[in-house]
Image 1 (cartoon, rainbow, N blue to C red):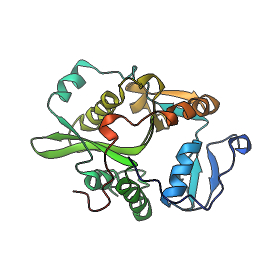
Image 2 (image 1 turned 135 degrees about the vertical axis):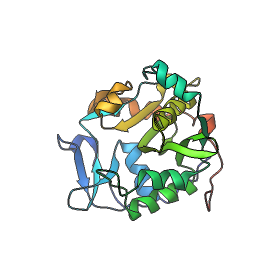
Image 3 (image 1 turned 180 degrees about the vertical axis):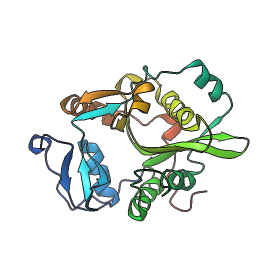
Image 4 (image 1 turned 30 degrees about the vertical axis):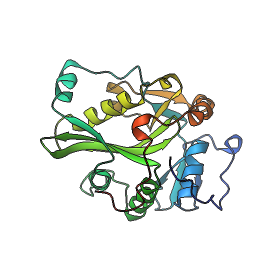
Length: 230
């Protein structure tokens, strides 16, 4: 089971007080307790254009229905070329997602350190696509009960990130799949082509408590690392 960190000293704004746009609040910190409190409230951090820590809850929240991912024949063929692993190369996945050569990159040293701490406590996981002994792509996100909040993905080979997402969906499809919530923050044309849909913010917040009450998927219910990740 993940280790619960000390609670955050910050008070997050109640949903009834949120503004009618995606950015809800600015400030606070990226300590584990603050991050977990935010995800449990329906928020996630991302820097603002001014470099501050912003707390976001999109008015139209993007989620992947676990029974709605579009898997083409070519993607299914690609999937057979890769092996899916969980948490065997977390830092390498994080570095791949944080590559400064990627456009619109937002994962700086502070974000990297914050999610590494949460990974060591057992709350953040990487889902990886491997081929011939090499990491070809992957994704990472925060898992709290039946919520998996996807943060970022990357690929070094064609279809590798899509295969990692497909692997994650497969891992979440257990006896509790109906109540699980795979959150991907904002929809993009690429994600929409894979089956991602948008939920109005009130609908997302209405579904969140049930998801949080569920047990972790078996593949993600592992002892905390508590140290160096290889």
